[in-house]
Amino acid sequence: MYQIAICDDEPYAAEQNEAMLCRILEERSLRRDIDYSVRCFSSSVPLLAYLKKNPSAFHLLLLDIELGNENGLSLAAHLRETGSDCSIIYITAYRDYVFDCFDTRPLHYLLKPVDREKLAGVIDRDLRENYHPEQIRLLVEGCWRTVDARNILYAEATSHKSAVYLQGGEVLYINRNFSDLLPHLNGKRFCRSHFSILVNLEHVYRLTGSTLILDDGRELPVSRSRQREVKKQYIAFLK
Image (cartoon, rainbow, N blue to C red; front, side, top):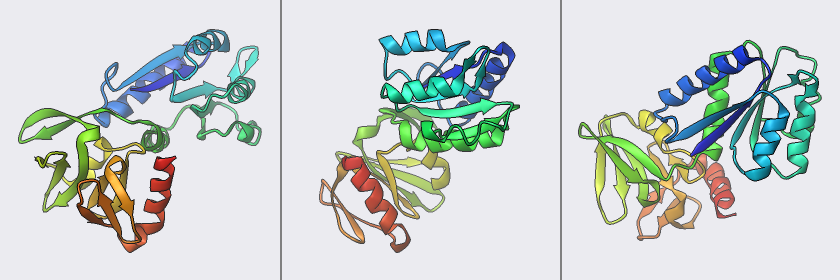
């Protein structure tokens, strides 16, 4: 589950950002309390108390910089010092802090009121890195089917449809374009090796310059333009 925290001392701003965030995620077919969760905090104290009990509780933190008498930058610095690697998006009404936040390795810095398209772009980037669904819902021949992501070998564009190849030889044909399928198969596990192929790195046995060899012996092409990126993703996945 993709777990998100919002820390903002302005209840209205926190509520608005939570609603915007939920709409963005639900447009990507993620369901609240099934695929993602959101928890709101009005100050650092309850957030730190929660993290003390659950150090790896959150993948993403939307953090206001001015929290009454507190400072979001100091909170973020403390999180980094104590080993937290959650992604941080600063949200503030002031531009003045933009150069002060670099040491905390933020994902982004957004000004209030938050621009929906900018937030969506940042969320998409973080989803690709940090959301690793074990169960994926796919619309197969008009019916929803839940598939274990670990059983997917690869997906491929076929005419105006998409094909998802599973362990054991089963193939699911999805009545949607390949580009529409991609957001459902995200996270570090999946890598686009070709314009029309997305492969599950868990099932890659060996990588050569232009070929991915799967653990069932199947060979998939790696386009020349993506060879460097595929190698980078594969090495990162192995680590």
